Length: 447
Image (cartoon, rainbow, N blue to C red; front, side, top):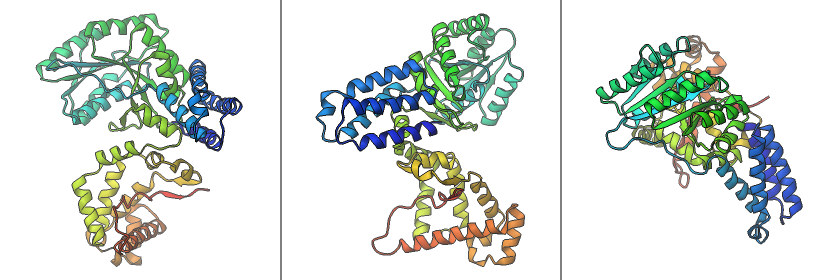
């Protein structure tokens, strides 16, 4: 989402770090470049002005002028102010105390992704031990109820529906969820334009009737300033407790994320980074600021690995690698666990400094699927003993997987190189922890 902004700000940061002495002149030049980068990212101009005023005021303070490394201090100030612009500290979602029913209500424009986000929230918090129920109150959009029911069936989560007004459906559903011993109800509502008084009054009445613990505004990150304008109207006329940004994995310039907190006063709580129900991440302003400035997000990467990787299985893999017994069966399991962590580009982007390294590289996200198809086309004996795969076997594997012989040869070569690397690590002074061997898949020099 922030790729273009990150690229521009990395250049600004590089220049300011080279300054031996910070003066009013070069601070002004630096902020001019920052201003241009933020406006081109579609950040609200009022938010940009306030942000730059704060950075300039602090940059010209005595603490910076007397600093041994003023350039680094400017970077820190920009980072800290960017964290503030994104909401300051991470704010966890709220739950009702004791046995009271927690109600979350999702509102926003049509097409912003409310229904899918309801399912993502339910899936995520069921893993955390909650007993979620979904409520279909979007009675305006054709097939909206059916969509939520389908998502509920896929996840094994109850979905409550009904006829009549959204208020009647919601109230009946709350009673049914309580009777079923649920402790979290997530209410999907119809999308509406912020300029439509009738629809805005309807959602305000629904909120007053069910009194949700949290009212989330769901904003499509791709809409830029339009999302900010509508969010401010929903905040004024309905009231919102937090924002969920969807489609952040697309080509959005990031202006909505950098503007919505300052305009509405409501924090961003979650970010949708894909279409799968698992593709919803808690929003951490400090981590996002670091990623925008090209500093990576190591903490976020570690959390992804911990959530996706079975630690007991990882210990077994490490032991097999040390004994040079790692085979294609293990490789296949690693590929599947790696896929749970998201796209390769997003993972590599979380490593400090990798943003620049990725330039000139073409990351083929389909490489993992092709590798899995190739391995699945092998016999069990071939997976355990890849050295027996001769020319005729390679042809059969290529036909069976729908790939070329070159693709099969490339995967076998990568696997062989990995095994040799692991054997070399058994030599004195080279022992260490092992990363995912599958990580390099899909990376090659770009055109």
